[in-house]
Length: 164
Ligand code: SF4
Image (cartoon, rainbow, N blue to C red; front, side):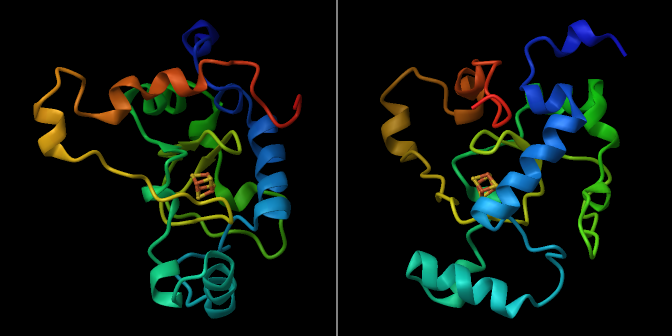
């Protein structure tokens, strides 16, 4: 691995130790989960529904995948593919019982917790990603894909809950 290729990547994508440590903080502080998203997880989703003031059904639709802090840009995918994160499985987290592996390798990154994350998990800090009205976009020459410019969001390479 050429570690220079990771220079512009978030810290957690350069270090599995940081990624794991930040996962444990997110699980403790923001109830990141569920351990196995493919289970029913009724109590997990009922607690999120109460927290967010929505129905359980609506809570089940608030996921990392549609969170404003979730990024699966080509840059992020390159960081995963070129770095240690590609070998990090959810089941490797020091948790009992172990978390379920949903993907072969991480495909998304969370700027809130500086972790890789599965698109079908969630946490207390989930914020629905607000898509721009496409009719408004037609009136501008700005990029139509928010991920094209989102790399700026994590340009602070010192960002890590280890240091924060
Ligand atoms: S902040 Fe958003 S992307 Fe990050 S873990 Fe929570 S739900 Fe997932």
